[in-house]
Length: 202
Image 1: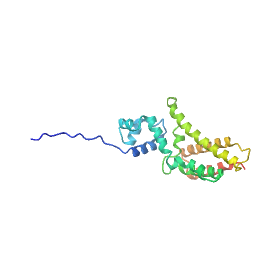
Image 2: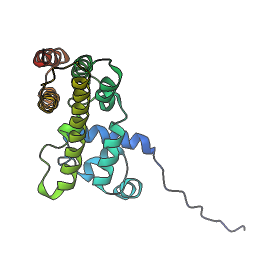
Image 3: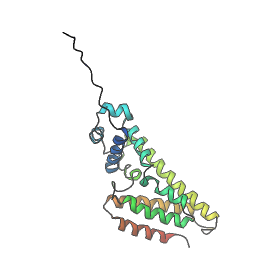
Image 4: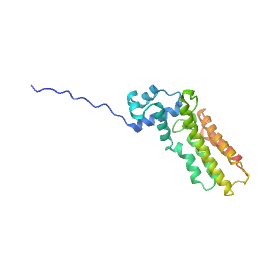
């Protein structure tokens, strides 16, 4: 009688990109602090050991999620508007209109991941709070650069407060994100965007 050999099966694999996408959605919906590792493994359809092996810890996974978010339309519309429009006024008007579209949450969770994920981050996760704050500050720096270039080109008055305008538009975008989280529709956010442009220097 021939000897029977037991063939061990290979551990079941998973689609890493798909799992990352599910983690992105969960962090976007709940924020960083309110999303536990068990929540993540349930949503991603993997075991904790697989999460740690593939992505590292929760912080590392979140940073990879934010990087992936930065390649989506919701994560690229600001840079695209600032880069592609011929005038600063057109760039900021488009940016705010696009914010209304992308933050309204018709095709994904409402609001901006980088803004909403920072809500209620505890002192123990200051690394994540600083990481998200740095991204928001980087966006504000892009606003300042575009506005200063516009002032130098004569698009804005010579005495225009470009730093103040950058702070203002950053506050508008962040406020629109919170309004979206509170249920504001795309049309309601678009009204905010249009009203915000009334502050553009004459």
